[in-house]
Image 1 (tube, rainbow, N blue to C red):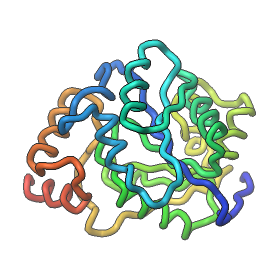
Image 2: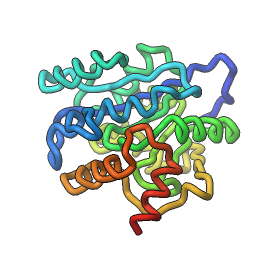
Image 3: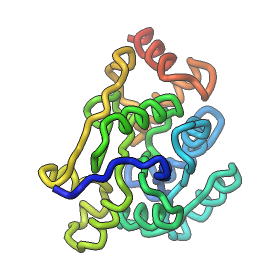
Image 4: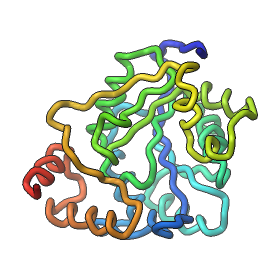
Length: 236
């Protein structure tokens, strides 16, 4: 197992949100409108008021097809990093290095309903479970309210080993899950009142329609997870 170092007060935490224009199931979904905004801006605005990190970085590729995506995010006032296309590990490692991050909170661009409340809750929970290599909500939180928090130096070390296969380079934390005996992985548990059956990722047209319907019925884009839960319970 790799050695885990406890968090220091000086450690810099940053959110890196990854997205690109290319998508086989829903091309250009990051710029598709939800609640009157491109989906990526909808997401970024929902986490903008976080108190738990010092930086929010949007990470996309250097491909020309992502020029418009880059421009939209920059015009909304967010920091953009452009890097590798298929090698997501390299893109995240390079983004973390450029912005001097000690810990990365990974958010994917297809989870528009993440928000500052759940983000800060997960950061607090992760700090209470140090040391770890990776802290994850997967399998615990509702699907689409997803966070993974990892030590930047651990991911950089994986990148430099050259041992990652193509799938592990594309799926950022896959190597850690595939070799869980070598890392300390911890689970982030939600508050009991947040436990609902629902999937809030946007992968296809049906998901997009559902997300738009949620926003329309709640009536605003900055709703809380409590309001999301109430909506789901009411609909069911």
